[in-house]
Image 1 (cartoon, helix red, strand yellow):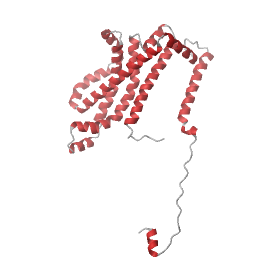
Image 2 (cartoon, rainbow, N blue to C red):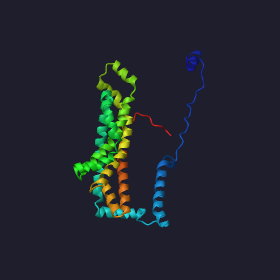
Image 3 (cartoon, rainbow, N blue to C red):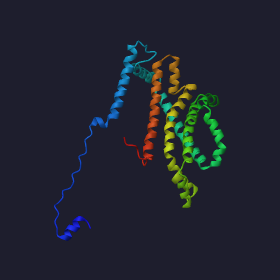
Image 4 (cartoon, helix red, strand yellow):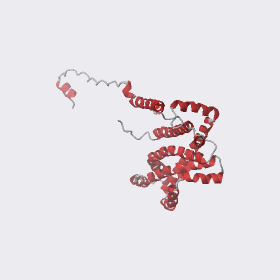
Amino acid sequence: MSAPEASSALGLRLPATEPTAQPAVPTIPWYTRHAVTLGSLAFGVAFLLTWQLLPPALGVPSYIIPTVSDLIAEAGRMAARERLIYHFASTFFIGSIGFIVGSLLGAAIGYVLGMSTLLEKILSPYLLGLQIAPKVAFAPLFIMWLGYNAWPKLIVTILVVFFPILVNVLQSMKTVDRDMINLARAYSMSRMQIFWKIEVPASMPALMAGLRIGATLAVIGVTVGELVGGNTGLGYLITFGEGQANTAMVFNAIILLTIIGIVLYGVVAFIEARVLHYIPRAIR
C-alpha cells in the first residue's frame, strides 16, 4: 500500500506537495551550434586569401602558381572558347555511369561469391590477379581495341570502382553472425530468405563504405581514360593545358574534377544516411 493510501485509511491528511520544477534547458549560442561550419568557412577564406596574396608577394610567376583571380579569369575564357561546360558534362556523365555500373557489378558478384563458397574458391585466383593488375594500365589497350571514344574511359572507370565494392561485400558476407543464420534455418527459412532478411542487411555498412571509396575512385578512372586518349573531358583539358604551359587551365580542370568527386561522394553519403538510419551515431 502506498503512503497516500495508508494515510487515507488512517484518516490522516498529508500536506499537499507541489510538482518538482524542471531544470531550465541552457540556451546554446548560435555561434556554438554552428562552430564547425564557421570554422570551415574561416579556413577556406584564409586559404584563398593566402593563395591570392602569397605567390605575388614571394615573386612566384603566375605560370608557376596562378592566383585565385587568374583562375577565375581563365575559367571565364575556358567557358567562352574551350567549351568548358561540355567537357565538364562529359566527365561527369561518364564518371557517374561508370560508378553506377561498377557498383552494381561489384555488389552483385560479391553477393554471389559470398553465397557460394565453392564458386569463390574457383574464381578467387583470377579475381585476385585482376585486382592486383593496375587497372589504369589497361586504358591504352582499350583504346587500341575500341578507338578514341567514350568506351575506354567508361570501362576503366568500371574496373576501378568494381573491386573495392566487391571486396567489401564479400568480406561482409563472410562475417555475418552464424548464430542468426542457424536460428533462421531452425525456423525453416529458405536460402533466399536468409539472404534477403539477414545477409543483405548485415552487409549494408560494408557496402556503403565500398561505395564511398568507389565514388572517389570513379573520378580517377575517368580522368586516366581521358588523359591517355581522348578529345573530350576534363582530363583532356589537363593534357591540352599542359601542352600550352597553361597552368591555370590545369588547376581549373583539377578543381572541377574534385567537385565531381565531392558530388558523387555526397550522393553516397545521402543514401547511406537514409539506408543506415537504424545505426546509432556517436554523439560528441
